[in-house]
Image (cartoon, rainbow, N blue to C red; front, top):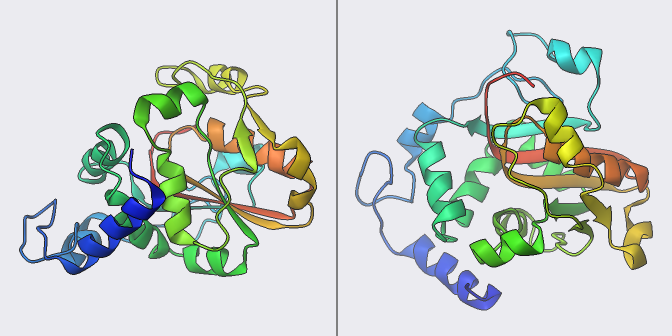
Length: 238
């Protein structure tokens, strides 16, 4: 596990040393070249509160109109498909924390991401349970959050207080039950949420169950506005 200082040095080195695009293998390039970003992360019409694709001109999907989620806005940089799924896998499961800087840049390029980051008071990473953190060696959401907003990222305010089984393979209702009481605010700091604009950061949004559960905790703590910001969004319905 890299220390924050070592990770910062790695970021700085990676920013100045020529590399090869992980997608098209162009040289020299950033980790993903501008051409591949334009090709594989084009702007798309998405639901403003869950980021699922919608018809051009629509603001929300039918599910969010019927049952509004606890988010004021949801922003994604791309769909969870190749090549991003492979790159995120390297970042998340193979310990390649150096991807965080490239992904933070990609996330900032998403429509509405910059205004959300500029207007927020706090940027909170989705927390990992202690068991998962030991397994991976770092929290990928924290690595993203501190690069998106170095002065406002706070990994100690929103906590994962209960380890839950993997969400994959579960229906949406099962996912929601699985996450009941899984998140909480740090008891000695819970008052810091009241009246604040929050950006909640994660790598991938699948059903939205985890982000929604965390957002409800923030809403109960008095958050005024909550934006979820993720690298990628799967495209199947809730």
